[in-house]
Amino acid sequence: RSSQQLVGTLSRGSRRSLELAHGCGVPHYTSVDALHDGIDIACVAVPSQAGVDLMVKLLRRGIHVIAEHPIEPHHLEEVLNEAAKQNACFHLNSHYGDIDTVATFLTRCTIARSRQSPLYISALLNPRTIYSCLDIAARALGGISPYSFCLLEGQSRQVGETAPTTARPIFTVLQGELGGLPAILQCQNYVSREDDASGAEVSHQIMIGFADGNLLLGEASGPVLWLTTGPASAISTQPAWSHVSSALPLTFEAFQLQRDIANRLAIQRIESQIETGVTPSIQAREYLLDVSRAWRAAVNCLGPVEVIGGGHVDKLVDSDQL
Image (cartoon, rainbow, N blue to C red; front, side, top):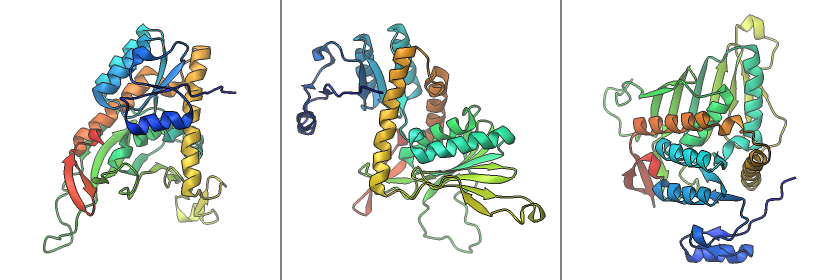
């Protein structure tokens, strides 16, 4: 069993951080140099260069690091190189891959792939879930390379109308390939100012097609469905669709608990590598770099997205700033 125990928090010293440390009954630190000895793992949720600098300092202190996604490819290479130099472990936590419903989807996809090769993959997602969606896709397909993206041709062209419509487009559509499969990504082109899911119409909806059916992850919270396809004469007596899991629908409160459990599983995974020296396949250097590079390619292709607050558009930002 894991012996996870919080021993401190590290921040620039905001009131919220101080209150959090006090509420957890642990010391609060404002610099890596001030950390006491004997700390095993640090969980870092700081973006951009500041996060990279922090992770490098922690690794040089001999502290293993698990970081929140996303991380730019060149930043990721820097941290991975430092971890190797210090003989320390570095893991990237994309959160959603360890949730029960997603794990069910991944297991069922592995079973389907053992029978036949997948034909395509499609996803509905939003700018804040691009990285985690690509990570799920990589786990489902056994890798994400080769990958490529381009904007779907003619997205601005009106079809079936004699006059331009004033309807506001919700999605930007990318086409290309993931893991060598034909791929379509429909990404919501706006987000809310606050990262509280209030502006997310979609999150992690993924479908992988096979010759005899389509495997659908409705969202990270479920459901997972198998949609039977094929000639009518061959499938007439089969269910048109079926639940892959018998789990009951999750409340939002229960789903949040699932996310907490997934984060603990991610910590257990890095603990296991520390103890055994065996790197999990989903934390291998090339796997992490492949997903990060695919994310960056998708973000570059999508371009700026709208940040919406109070019913109006505040600004346009790049997806990597969310």
